[in-house]
Length: 269
Image (cartoon, rainbow, N blue to C red; front, side, top):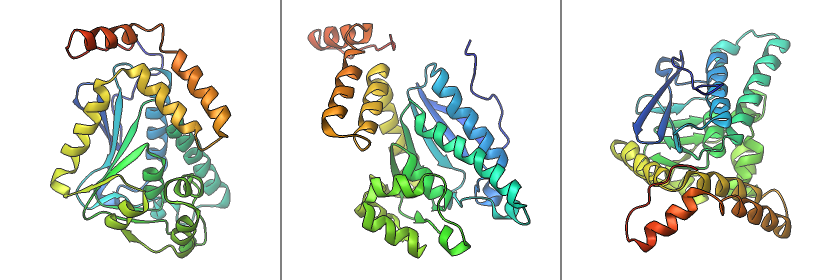
């Protein structure tokens, strides 16, 4: 049994396993635009922390929102209304830890953007490993229109996705943009009709989950290093990550299955 298991019940999230080795994390506050409140921040942190400690049989995560109109409206401004400075900063400290836990999650996270992704919702998209969006999805980082600025890694992850100049335009104007623009600029990888979003995302997640889980985790970590260091040091990290897989049973199974012309049965060992 894991020492830090996934929560069995959440107030603001719905956790499902729609396919083998795939976990769906659904932001489930539809009456509040799936907005991020203190409880959701705590529950998301618990999910990401759990997967950091013990992935169990989970090999890919889909992050999406309840309904067909809003992925996540960002921070819950109704809850934040009339907060003291100390209360605001304490809540934000929790959100900081939650986002760090999400970025540190060893399991690939695919965002399935089922509608508006504003503020923190857009930052979730930028923090995911990659994202698919519905045709009706819209995006914005509106914080500068509210007297604040992105504070959930938006100024770090967005430039890595769309480039510095585009990120400055998005953040400094606070203007919304379409799913087609998000695709053209590199924030999302694919745009599909809303009716097909989860099916298409699940197909990709299942394909990832069918691959060797140690390989997937090591490759994800190595790719993440690419934008954080120079080429030579990044390659040294890649080689260290690669060598971790040489003595695994999965490496032997993969080569054996190739030569036997069959599908490999990876066990994560």
